[in-house]
Image 1 (tube, rainbow, N blue to C red):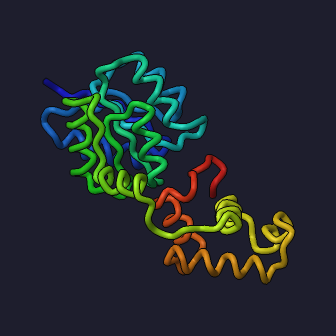
Image 2 (cartoon, one colour; image 1 turned 30 degrees about the vertical axis):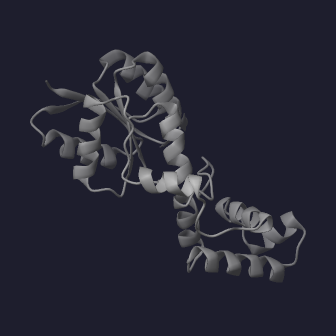
Length: 213
């Protein structure tokens, strides 16, 4: 049987790349595409695909809203969550929402195709390459242990604030803020803000938010 696929991602180039990778398979056909939550829900109802591949971050909301709605619509639809922010929190959120698979956008095309096949054949069985390690981290927390103040500074960095802005918001001096940031970088093994935020997301220390730069 042909595996029919709905792609939900607001980046046209990503959808094009996914479509080409999927349609190299003789039994896979992309039958619909959507660039938003609203379009994804509408196309899901209209086309009833075997598998929906859904990005977490969409311009009009969270991709998990699409996952929950599609799962409510069809118990047998395979749903693959595809995301740039592949942290533990995002993985477990996808599992809780009813997804069949969780794949980072950095994964090779073969892994995404394999996730789509799994979702089509076993929509109620969740799979992710990092699931076992994520479960270990959840039951036996490892990695950097951040103080409450360091967590505050980390979130403000994620919100795009600079040193002076963080200092004013937390009522501390610039030198104290710089000390907190330096300790954060050391604990996360990061050399700059971008590396620190990506590591924090991967370790589940930071939630991806729609307003996060």
